Amino acid sequence: MKKPLLLTVSILSSFLIQAQMPSLNVASIPDSLKKNASVVKRYENSFFEITDIDRGYLKTHEVYTILNADGAYKLFFSEQYDNKFFFLENVEIKVYDAAGKQINKYKKKDLMTYGGSDDLINDNKNSYIKIPAPSYPITIETEVEKKFKGSLFLPFYSIIVPDEGVQQSSFTVKVPKNLDLRYKEQAIKLPPKVTEDDKYKTYVWSVSNLPAIQTEAGSVNAANQYPYILLAANRFKMDDYEGDMSSWKNLGIWYNELHKGTDVLPEDRKAFLKDLVKDAKDDREKVRILYSYLQKNFRYVSIQLGIGGWKSLPAAFTDQKKYGDCKGLTNYMYAALKAVGIRSHRALINSQYDMAPVDPNFPMARFNHVILCVPQPKDTIWLECTSKVIDFGTLGSSTENRNALLITEEGGALVPTPRSVAAANKFNVLTTIVIEPDGSGKVVSKFNTTGYFKMLIDYVANEKKDDQKEFIVNYMGYKQPDEFNFTRKEDPVNMLAELEMVVEKVPEFIAGNKMFLSPRQYKLSETKMPKSDKRKLDYYFNNPYVKTDTTKIKLPDGFAIEALPQSKEIKCGLASYQTKCWYDESEKVVFSTTSLTLNQLQIPAADYAAVRKFFDEVALDDAQRIVIKKQ
Image 1 (spheres, rainbow, N blue to C red):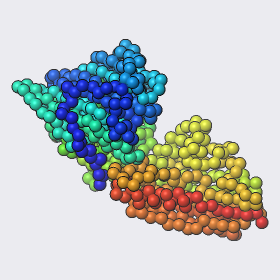
Image 2: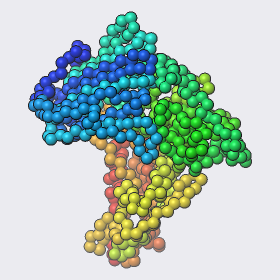
Image 3: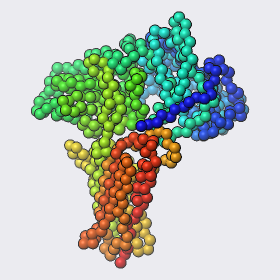
């Protein structure tokens, strides 16, 4: 179980809404706030008011001191808006030196603005400026005013983030009483001060003198592990679609209403899809055929027009254009299955391997991806509709083992997605090496991969030759080739590939008449887990996996074995490693076999030390060498 990084605020201000800004002289910052910090938030006063079910505005006044170059990210000011639901009304930025003297000033008109990209169809705009810093420390003051049209998404109160101390901060929310604002405390116990009159409720959260919290590398997404307050309104409205978010069921009802009529395909296209699956033996095979058609004929393009972050374009549009975003491609697959008589459900989900899970007790619109769920009598099929290479019925590490909001005919229901298993991500390598007496040689590696590694090999196979070479050398750890050829062969289940290389020097080094050889020509594992004596948060790998390697090394004429690595077996509760090396004198070939298994991607904090020790021992064993000597 993950232990929450809970911040108990021991020093609260007496509600800082009227508090004066502290002196901007850096010397006035308490030493306790500078410890382990690259930035100190000197002052923050944010005021958010919902004036109606689909109207609101936010005013933020913030002052932060950047202590050193590690905090330079704060010099980049950026605000995103679309002028339909989110409006940037005003920006004022002032810059101060270490003594608190103003040295520069910027307004909204001084900001650069851009929008969209080649693979993005959207209304979004981004106004930004990179503030020059003659020296450190430097203090930045910002005042920003924004308006909102729609209440599906409400701002949240980010109290403290990694490596930043907080001197004074407050967040005030004023909301009509009939909208029933809800809030959720994340990693902090901080009840608001609540006042009310006939029409409005006002909530005030405030803190002061919070020392910097150091990040824990490899933990859950940093935006989710540190203290913040989430907001959600029970009644909301977005783009004239009014809804109720007091339950997951009601949010699903709203989503159904939003997508009414978007799953209609022309009759000729329905006939085409029915013809595709006419010879399928059962529904599962029909789903597989249609999913294969989707992967081969459609491509992903992000679409964020209007309420496009949530509403799919019609399935007929996607069918005609042969592109769509996650919503559009999933909606198309939903419509295609419906056309052949198969029931399915869209599923809203947070897509990122290290995202914090959705809280079942706090319904809110906090999803960034859509996948498809196809119920079957014996098993449920989950489909990732944006990938051209992911295996049928497989979810990647970014969507596995978390709550998804299943959109059914009755509304929404939170359901868990399957947990990935090591066997779904196989990386099997068979390598043959022929060494010449001068140490040069030919290396041939044959790859048999599934899951994550299948996608990786497919990606590399589609890259330019120079990019392939960079991947082979820098990512996989092969030696710099003089010549190489990378080819692939697709298989219904696995991704097969072959790498042929000519290298100038196969040994790690040559000393006199001896060659020192690595048992493998690439890095089976380069995991280096950071030191952490008192780990509080879970650690995340990209995915669980099974890696196996067999390497055959043909000795050059006139050479004999002097030393072989010892066989080794290393285990911990969540991983295992075995290696064996032997010499076949009749063939003059050294054989090396290795297997490495990581059983799950999420390592509980309590198991961190054991898993770290395991990988440290694997790295030590990987440093063993085969020694051959010229006779």
